Image (cartoon, rainbow, N blue to C red; front, top):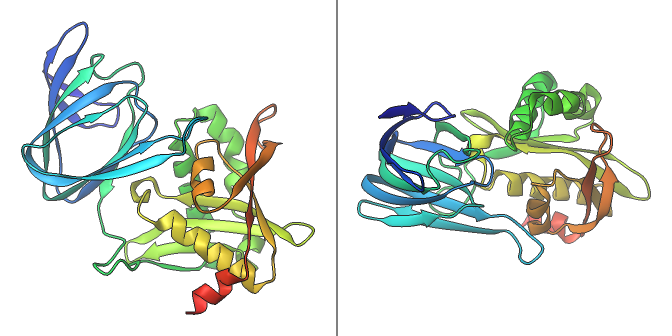
Length: 290
């Protein structure tokens, strides 16, 4: 039985029972897709043809830090994607054909939305970035705001929530003119951006850090945060305060920020967000000059 997944992908459901289902699907060549939120089902994959990579991410919890793993996929491979896992699939030039068994039956209580797009590498064979990080251009404010909204929607917030956040996600023209917005880009366009503004007592505040969903987990966010640190170190800034989305807090911890407490949301009354601090070491500047 041919069915359409929430993301629009065509899935051939081979069997469905009360406890499990089996389906066949194909990911097209040179594509990337990422499950937005932690899945509500266990899924056993068997690769029948093609190849690619599967990146799985177990979220941070009270017992352990977030963990990310990468596995190369090829014909005959089988693997289990457990409930509670975010994942990203990258296919090779011949695509990827999979038969999957899902427990409980697909699509589960809330199927993870798969955002698909064209795959382009961000690292060379030598491990260097194939994209650049530069200051934002004066006419990019609208494009950056739209990107921020897409990245925020990645966490499956509803339309009312996103509408309440829209003003806060917008990048101010004055911030761009002051050189306080950094953009990661390659020939295909903008991959992500980060923005900051001056605070008090020798510290700054991170206003934005968003990556286009199809470019997540490819080093773009790390490169943006490294560029922010270098820029702030050059200006003699001592620390960076970060009010994070709960889902993004583990990322900031991985780049060196420390959780300091919580802070009320600027957009949603009654909502508290993680507050982190990143110490800006002078070495951030010297390392960038090497």
